[in-house]
Length: 136
Image (tube, rainbow, N blue to C red):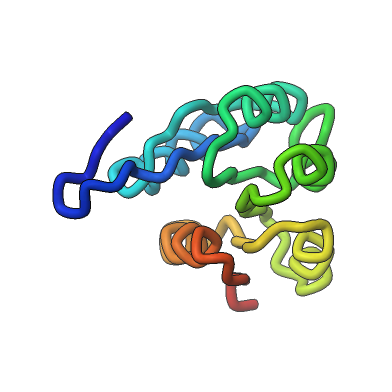
C-alpha cells in the first residue's frame, strides 16, 4: 500500500474496468498517484470478482463492457458493499444515461470525451460521498 507522507493516510484504493485497453491505460494513468490502482478488468464478470475480492474505496466502471455492463456490476456490488463509491464512464452524454447511473447507485457519471478534465474531480467528489456528473 502506498502511503502519502504528507498526511500519513493510506492512498485510496481503486479498481478500474474498461474493455478498451488503451482507454483502460488512460484511466489508470489519470488516477495513479492520487489513488492506488489495485486491479483492472476488461469485462464485467472480472470486474465484479475483483471488486468483491479487493473491497476498494472506489470503482471506475465502463458503462458498456462484454458480459455484465457497468450498471449490472454496480447493482451486484452495492448489495454486498453498500459503502462502495462508484463512478460510471460512458461515451453517452445524454442526461438520461447519467440519471440511470445515479439511480442505480453510482455517485458519479463521467462522459469519456471529458475524462481528462473530469475523472479526478469525480473521484474526489465520490470519495466524499458527493455526486458528480460531467457537464452535457
